[in-house]
Image (cartoon, rainbow, N blue to C red; front, side, top):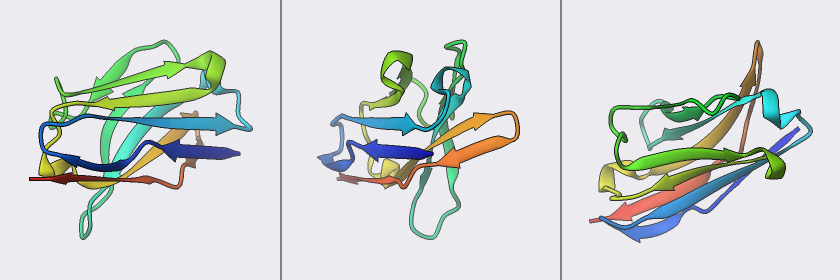
Length: 114
C-alpha cells in the first residue's frame, strides 16, 4: 500500500495550492480519505475528510477556504487550498481509513509566507 502526496510548496498569504494524494494497493472506493497537517512543535491535526459516499467534513479553521474532493477513477484525493494564511504552514499528510485499517502518506510541505 502506498499513498503518494504531492502539490506542496511555498506560496504567499492569500494564495492557493492544490494537494493531491494518489493511492495504490487499496480498494480506493471504499476508503474514506482525509488530510491532516502537522506544524513544527504541534500535534498532527485533522484538516478535512471525504467519505466513500462523497460526504465531506472540515476543521473549523479551514471551512470556507479549503475543499476536499476525490476521483475514484484515479485513486486520488485532492485538497484545494485557497486564501492561505501563514498559520496554514505545515506538513500535510493524507490518510486512508476503512473500518480498523488505516494508512498514512509521507506528507508534503506547505509554507505560507506573510
